Length: 454
Image (tube, rainbow, N blue to C red):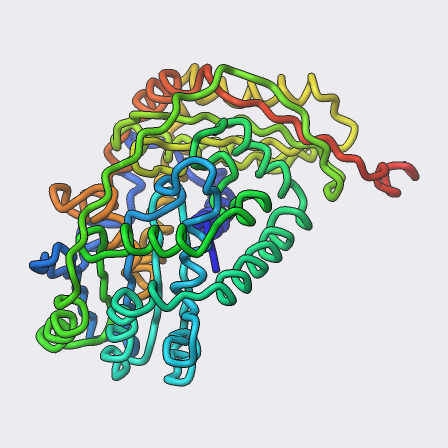
């Protein structure tokens, strides 16, 4: 199962739109290059709160052939508490797959021609996802309800150990055996120093996973995977009247539980610089990372646009590449910038290059053509998501959990167009300073053979 989401499509779109930058002519303002309207992002949504506290979002689309059922909870890694790293992700695995023949939800959905099933855990949320043929909506909603009603007390020791081993293999595939994977782990260890819940990332360290007991799993599920702490988003082809009746039948009868209060987290660390060996990649990389506690949602929007702008500052010339990203989550955000450089670049030179690119964002207003390209990329990302019933359900659930109904969805999805270059610069200047982490990943593999010949 995935445990980090949203970055792959953004990376693809940045690369695509970057090709358009040279052709964008300077004009009177950003809006002159806008190719979308508010109607482009209009989505029909019927919002209801059940008596047990579950927020239900129904988004019917008669043009679709399938329906997506997204069940999200405030139950990400931040809610694990200290010394239980990986608990939320482990609970997600157990609740997604089921533990007995009667609760093997994944197998049951596959037998009924499910087009997509998954679950994912992030910093602050846990989500169970299914896209099924339109006629299988009753089954998908039954699974969503039965998972909460019957599964937690039926989780046994054998299932716990099996999924613990699955997650260790997942860590090996995603962190140990990929370039810069262990660098990613090191960033969490340093930036979120113990006892912060994110100290070992979302997936957890092997030692912490080994210490999780059956009691830990059952208590976490019973406390956080409850209607009052969740959001159900249904998008695709369905009759809203029928869907609402099914939701009441399968989920409305469940005990409410209570909304999870946001856990207090230790303050950010002092500035530090670290070096990490990189055995798999041949190229050095420097990562700059900032924990941003108490950042406003509007300022996070400016930094998201700033991250997109940073990716346009180099087109790969001289072997350089930049990747930047903002991960906004409850109470905080994480901003990262990664600069990959040629093999022979010295650590001191890499740090200077990274600082120079960052200064372009924090010390001056970005050119209009770059602002326009970044806005177009964000538009494309949202429009691609809304065109897919699964991603549309995800957008709806995330908006409810992280923003709330007070802000209209269309305003939220188009907020980046209301930002000016000077705002992005000023917000970046305010937040992208100390304390932060600078991590140098130095290759331990031999120099590439091509470089030796040259």
